[in-house]
Image (cartoon, rainbow, N blue to C red; front, side):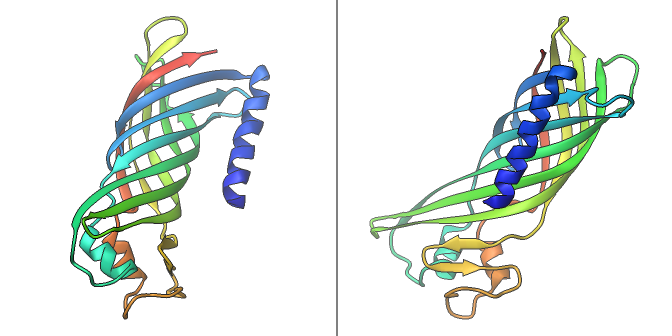
Length: 218
């Protein structure tokens, strides 16, 4: 949580210097392991002669949380009764640097790279078995890709983005059990390890992302 608060504070600092820089806001949707929707802001020319722009934002993604039977064994018990119903989501926070490649035609074509922080929540409900639990996890990641802005008016641009995000392993918690990447686990079931827990749920590992949206210059 402390890291997340620090991440958001840096984003707010960037926003505070926007009065002396070019600032734009955007909304986007697309695919990132599932249907994804988010908002972001770009700050450029915030330091004289600095060639990079900065983007920060948040995205919500709906996804398949994993294998309900395997997740039940790894985090709860070997019961096989009930009909599984599942849902999953991630909240993704990003802080990226963008370099304008200055291709002819688009308003701007950026090569982007930066840091991501992802919060995962998978819900597993077994109808008829009176059992329901969440599996949660947090991860850091790194992104790389291309993002283009195409002018639609003086202030409004169409945004197209394609890239990928690689995530590092992070702890997974469900019911009274926690699996850690170093296998210093809390109340693991049977002889399961972090590898088993990671295979049971669909926390992000390597994800392509393809987005389309609208960007508005302030």
